[in-house]
Length: 96
Image 1: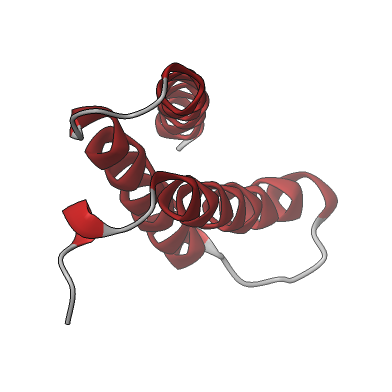
Image 2 (image 1 turned 180 degrees about the vertical axis):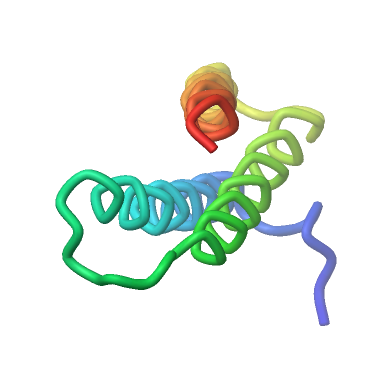
């Protein structure tokens, strides 16, 4: 099994994006359910799963930033990913 630091930066950023978006969507489901009452049960457990996925995506983006000798455009993308996932995490922590 190869080390994560040896993987391609663009592939790691794609994975970070996928985990982040899935985490945000999963966190939005209970939020919408609180307002529109699609399901009568509480969906609070989905918030934990969504936040965990967002943290995983954030950690992958930070891992890309910590790599040495990466292109400046890849570094900028990783910085944007960290910013977006950080703001999303703060939002979902404030909503809970």
